[in-house]
Amino acid sequence: SYELAQPPSVSVSPGQTASITCSGDKLGEKFASWYQQKPGQSPVLVIYQDTKRPSGIPERFSGSNSGNTATLTISGTQAMDEADYFCQAWVSGIAGVFGTGTRVTVL
Amino acid sequence: EVQLVESGGGLVQPGGSLRLSCAASGFTFSIYWMHWVRQAPGKGLVWVSRINSDGSSTSYADSVKGRFTIARDNAKNTLYLQMNSLRAEDTAVYYCAREGMESTPYNDHWGQGSLVTVSS
Image 1 (cartoon, rainbow over the protein chains, first blue to last red):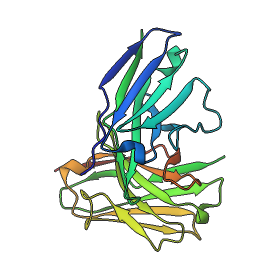
Image 2 (image 1 turned 60 degrees about the horizontal axis):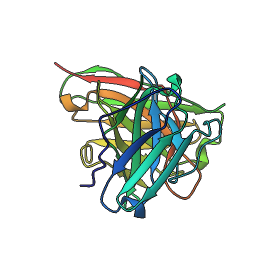
Image 3 (image 1 turned 90 degrees about the vertical axis):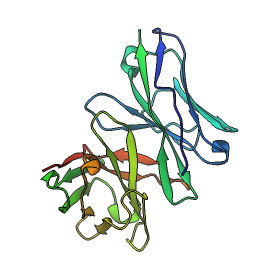
Image 4 (image 1 turned 135 degrees about the horizontal axis):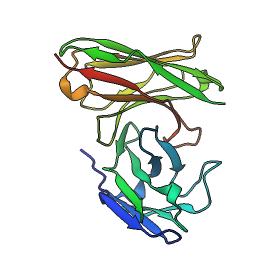
């Protein structure tokens, strides 16, 4: 089965850059999306098709995907960005796989 | 405004059945593919199932294949998940989610979730 690995946690100071990685076999050959989930809330799409931001998502969120790793970058991190983040990819176009999740803490 | 409202969750005994519903509004439901995603308490997201716009094509995670059935009624703007032979490990919040309109799957809108607890 296909697996996507993320670091369990990332800490960042306010105003600094947070990078969250998502690793999977030949992930760069698939499209990755990223979801933000705050405690007690439903997930929110922040990046799709590797680099695209939905309307309403701040420009400080960006994404990349190459080789075996997709990366979500939060530039100028704010306290409101503290949340869990999950990557997702599709296997053979028929089955979805989520990453293990990363908790971002803004210190 | 896009709205997805799940219902039908609750407590069920192991081996029992439950049907979840997801009422959609604020968009043309009949042209969108839809998904179910679940999240066990304190755990990560797990993709469960997907259905195409007219209901003729479905796919499932291996963990639920043969036990769960996804379906939709476009006349009622409603998505369903029939869950049979439930196990303790099926305990989770179940989200319905809309798939975006680009060429690759992603979920651009999510419901608030419905909690399913499988316990004796």
